[in-house]
Amino acid sequence: MRSLLTQLFQNRKAPDFIAVLSLAHGRSETRRIWCSAALNTYLVFSHAGQVFLIEREVIRKNNGKVSTEVALGMTSRSPDQASPKRVLELNRGHWTIENRCHYAIDWNFDDDRSRIRTGNGLENIPRLRCFAAGAIQFISGGKSSAAQKMQQLNRNTRLYSTIYGRRLIQLN
Image 1 (cartoon, rainbow, N blue to C red):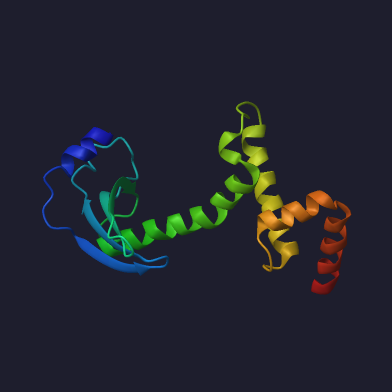
Image 2: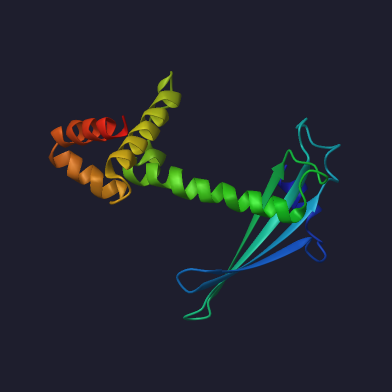
């Protein structure tokens, strides 16, 4: 499928939409998107609405270094349901969630190197990690990072029940 998408966008013309962003940490980013529904009859996915190619160009303002990244994707939203601008927004929103939630879980629990491959553990362990990350964020009240709170809890395990109990009483 990847080669089919690559062929479709190989001789692409002008992008369907361009977004220029000024990001933190001295970066400027330009996102270009090309969308197509031309493959919908060929794809084996019954809910394919359109395919897209996103090209991200990041310029570091301090040294002028340019990096380019290309991503191919598919969405269930048809061109009538989502314009190229909307597809680009949805894609960026997905990575916001990925960075905010999953990155924190992977960083704090080293989730990507988990060796759990069989049984119900494959579904249950990530759920437990999400619960633990939520509980840690809940008890920290947003005042410290999850990593800092985990270090504090590792040194004093009673702290969890004390803080968690107090926070529940305050909510009632």
